[in-house]
Image (tube, rainbow, N blue to C red; front, side):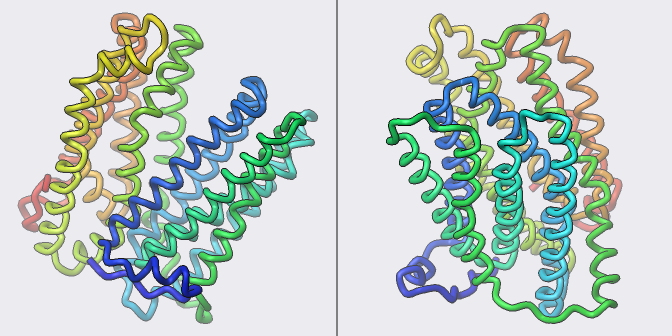
Length: 431
């Protein structure tokens, strides 16, 4: 994999870039900072404002996550694949095009949010702060993934540290005040503390060349071939996760919903690792996939082995220690939830096994098989979730997710073989 590019930053910051650490570890560290900041922010807000206000914040946050999911499908996920296939001379121009799309998308989302908020008069006090949060979060998400795709992993980490550290410091200052903290104040704090990260990311990316109209057309077509199936897939992914949780709370109780969210939080470290791997590795795998299939096989196999060695033992230990962990940190009379944690460990084990197929499907000519797999898997989980929850209660939701992953892996294995990336081109179905 390519080495990280030198950073044009102040001397105190350039020392970070001279540390001899593999770029993938910088990428994982950046994702860890972002995830830890989100987790601690939620705790701060719940303590500062109370559960009622935290519920309102969560509703706005859900809208933000939906916007980020659509943005990722339209802009950053196709960019991760296309950028690595371009000759070096065109990559800067393509980066300019990506940022242009980001500006247009942000304007459209802000307009749609403002129109929707007109139907809710109580949202007027929060809307300005949420618009700032929406713009800064969306912009930083795209800049961060562009930095990772270009190899500037230390700069991405520095931006994450600035944003996350500033956010937690401001929230701590709000917590020390004698007066209660309001929801708009929280929104302003989270949104404005992202601005330094935007400045750092923009400075590292540097100036952009002029982009001719012919480049717009050529690069736009390649980008859209990837994005057209990713957009409905992103909507399905976002909807499926929330529909299953809402269903569990509806047929059960708020306690069941809370336990599931707690289980998701406990497994969050694996989510951040998988996301970091995809953000960093996919642009590099796309180069070898297009130019040197044998190198692609070796790179993917090495990546898969590293993931198994890093996560496999942790999942086994977590499953074996589920009982004592739930008894120590779980809710009262929560011994039954140990099985829930064990099922989550099995779920992530299956996700690790399916991951080479996921990366390969992302690199095919378009993303229709990526989308098709999620349609089938989500349909299977939704069709079975009522029966599963009736027989296995809370664990039934996790079993629905597990069934979805098995269907997903089976379909992607068929798609990879049918596309000729198996026997016909010498690429195995798994690493």
